[in-house]
Structures are given as structure tokens and as C-alpha cells.
Image 1 (cartoon, rainbow, N blue to C red):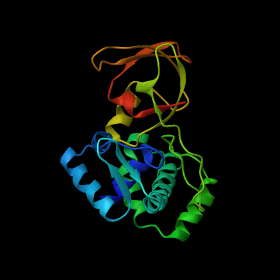
Image 2: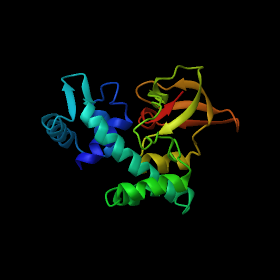
Image 3: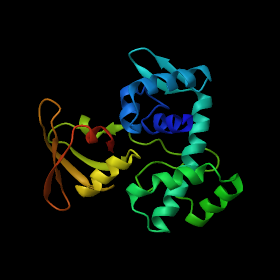
Image 4: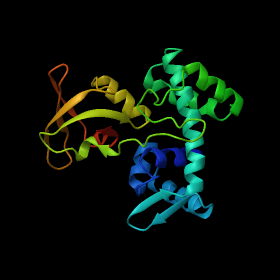
Length: 212
């Protein structure tokens, strides 16, 4: 469970910025109280730093562990989707099991077999064997301005989110124009430029779609 928190803090940008308890809670589908408890454990173990009202970030030790976990998880996701034909929203659970029973030697061979991918199927970066990678975009769709054009860069690795995005046919690499934000946490209306299709993205989902 601790590993899940390290990975999601990494994914939400916690190597560079502060991530809120609420973001973690929504991404992992866990109660706010559970997040508070686990964050306390991560801080105690020297893996995270918590600033009241600002949020959580990973320490250098936390980043190192998270990078290794993310590398394992995302290489397996890449294998399951690209080589075994898994649907993106169905891949997380099996990748979670495999990442914990895989030796470094097997990871290296898997990386070679896949051709050293830099990103996983949902757009997340894959650190290489030396821990090198290009930092992901951390701008979320919800923060894009009306009239702005953006490209979908990656999605949070969350089953419900990925199922929802499959339903509305939103994909990595899609070019979007933001039409408007409905008030009171309403949906965001977007135009998918390739298809000319207008669609609504829920307020919550728009916080877990990263754009550039």
C-alpha cells in the first residue's frame, strides 16, 4: 500500500511540487483519513515531506524508490497492452502484481524486449535503468483557459478514469480546443480537433488529464 502512495505522489508531480491529500484520495479512491495516516508514515520513514495546507512532496529517498516502482509498473503495463492486447483500463491490477515479483535481471530483459520505451500506454514517463527520464507535464486540463489549444499528454493510472475516457473516446495525443468551463464545478466543453467532435469532460476527470 505504501508503494501505491509513492507512485501516485510521483505521478501527480510530487517530485517538484506539493500534492494535496485530496488529489491522492481521489486518485487512489481511498478515504481522506487513510491518506492522512499513510502520509504520516511516509514522513516518519523519511520518504515524504508534508507542509500543512500546502501538501506533500517526495524526499530524494522517496523519489528514488518511486522511480524504481514506476519503472517496473509501467514496463509491465507496456508489455500487457502492446504485446498481449490488454485494454488500457484493465491493465493496472496485473501490472501491480508483476512489479512486485520481478527481479532486476528480468526488468532489464523486458526493457530490451520492448525497445526501451520512454512512456507507458497512458502517457506516463518510464525512468530508464539509470533513473534518467524527462519530467512529465503537470498542467491539468481543468486549468487550461477557454479558447486555449492543448494536446493530451497523459492520464492518471486510475481504472474508473481510464474507463470513462474510453467511453468518451479521448486519447493520448488528441489536440483539443477548450470551449468553456461550466460554472460551479460543472463539466468542461472541449473540441477534439481531429474529429471535429465536441464533448464534455467532467470536472473531476479534467484534474487527472495532463496536457501540454
